[in-house]
Length: 246
Image (cartoon, rainbow, N blue to C red; front, side, top):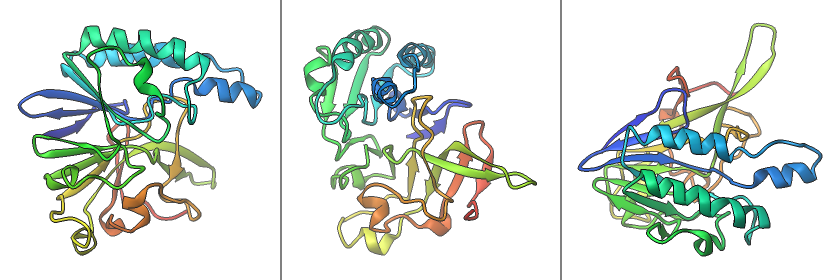
């Protein structure tokens, strides 16, 4: 499949025999937690739904790479009311919808409309590409393709200006894998890994170039990713190369 980020959006097109839209980490209902912490922020669901409606012109199938909902472990009252109409509307736009369950998605099957396919976070293979959430080890099937796509870590990058001010921006990650380490666990090593930034506008993430930053999930924690070959790209497509630690 040909993978191509959508300019200025945390969304990926995956084109092969079918045309897929791929997004990760919607975290529907996160505003409830923020409100309890003193932040009165309106629901981001309408904004995300509008973006996904527009993306349906680029692909007729949708894969959600986990953490569709936010509360752990069960559904909140807000999620129980918000997710079904959200997903029903997507079902009107896309021929097929696949949810790769994330660590926040406990109980989500109960509110998914009929026809939406939910699979394990260990992932799925579509044509030559594996899609996983990233919080558990990918399945052997997901690792058997040309490339691996994951979410979960909410990648971002710290940018420093000439006077030392720092901003944290969402980014894409593309990197090779450490073949020897991968083959200790799997029979095949994909050519590259692509990490999708969080789709929710409220979420930036952990800077990949922060000195104290920590990657999430077994693929990164067990050093299967070759950081020397890691490239970061801003949402507008700017290639930052391998950003220095700051």
